[in-house]
Every structure is written in structure tokens, then in C-alpha cells.
Image: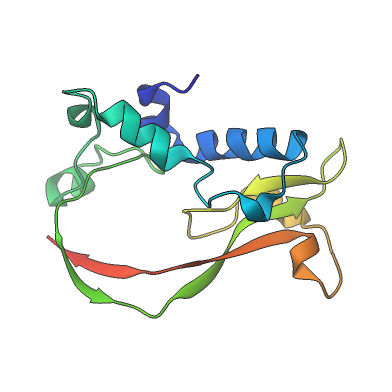
Amino acid sequence: AMSLGSLINDPLGELQRRLSAAVASGADLRSLPPDLGLKQDLGRALSTPGTCAEIPILDSASFHGGELQNHSLVRFRGMVQDMQEPEYYASAVQVASPGGPTFVNASFADVLPPLASALVDGGEEIGEVGLTRERQPVLCVP
């Protein structure tokens, strides 16, 4: 079971665990939501009073003070100033590994994970080796 503490400190790790479980079960990755159900589970966890306070706030002081762990979940209070054009990203990529090709989570990160240096070459069909999704970037100001 997912704990709120592990989700706050390692949300990308939780996504990888869910992706690995989905691949092992033979699920069609295209039919799954990009967050693999994490948003719904987080919403349930945060519905308990007081749990939202456990997620650190991203502000100038916490950012410059080095209080935030890289790739951790944060709260940000701001206003949407602008919406950018939709962009496409790889939410999962297939990589070579000792046990055979496996999928690696690439969602919610600006760069592919280190294992992605061993991307499986699927020829012309990117759909065979990766999962492309669309997202709507927004510019937020405090």
C-alpha cells in the first residue's frame, strides 16, 4: 500500500512501481490514465484532515534555502498567468535490461531517466517502444 510519506518523497518512484505492475499484468498501457491512478489515490489520502500540511510548500524561501528534495511532491499557491500550446511527451519508454526489455516511467519529469540510455529501437513505430501523451503546460505566478 502507498504511504503518504513515500508519495511525497518519491512520487516518480511510485509511478514506476505502478507502471511495472501494469506491464507485468499485461495491461494495455494506452488505456490507463497518464498518472496510473495516482491522482485519485492522492486525493483520497489528502481528504483526511491535516494531511495536506505534510506536503512542503514551494516558495522562494524553500527553493533558495535548499529545503526541498529533488523530485518530491510540493504545494504551490499561485495564479495561472498564461496557457502554452499543448506539448507531447513520452510518459513511458521501453529500455533494454538484463531481464529483457522493460518500460520505464518518464512522466512528470523534464528528462528521461538514466536507464533510458538503453532505449529499445522499435524502428519506425514509436508506439511499439514508447507511450506518447499530450499535456497542457501553464505558466503560474505566485
